[in-house]
Image (tube, rainbow, N blue to C red; front, side, top):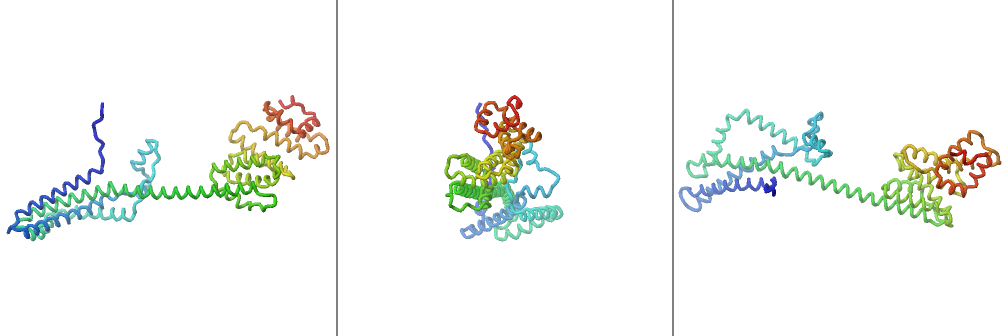
Length: 395
């Protein structure tokens, strides 16, 4: 079945209220026709007095309605009731949506509105008995510019237009003022987001530019300052850091490049910067690639290389990542290279021997990769032969 029910919109309320005020103005114009003595001058005089009286009442009522309709921001509501939740917050939680501040109007205006409305209501309730007399006095004063016996008509005009003005002012503040506050905040938030995005784009561009310069500099060219390079990488976004990691890894593995050692000099600080930017400590590959790069230099730093690959193993196990057993194979060959017994072609100490075997076991479990890893590593083969370690001991 077709839903013939039209959706109600609040925007139609004020136009309809203006129609009601227009009807009042028409009544004033018609009332002026009974002016005595007849004539255009008298007619326009009565119309002017009647319309200005109604307009004054309309504006006064509108100002009062505005004071009652000034919207309150969430911050003001929260400060007023710190231990309670607003209905809108409860509804947002029940619907699975996060409550958020929609607008932030001037809190001074809110306080003034609260003070004045409370004061007016309090004084009005106390002095309500004098209102009829005050209304009669005002009507008599305004009726001096109208035909005789117009006091009752002036009273009706004042009441009619003041009520219309009050409702108009209240609805205007309640509907449009809150909407304008929200739109102003949204524009402000959007401008902030755009500014942040532009800053992030500039930071990403600077990081990529410095990394490209570091990885492609000539051997006789002065390297970039390590701190500037690290700061630019830290300020980059996560996606750009992933690109930087891939570029550094690729440069570190270009064994046949003539400037491989020059690239390694740039790769090492890049991986250090990526490690420093990993505040949560969840990216083990940064440590692993730094360990590989430290071993590939002309003067390998085996001690730090072992430390970094051990951190990579630790992080990998903490986050529950599967695979990456080459870390253990890499650490085993580092320990073999640093073993003074192996350098003198003697079997390793029992404790070190067990450490190396414990590293070779997870590497050997990767049956599809073990032969590939072992094929180019004479160091590991020689150590296994020297220490009488067979593949059956690694199962």
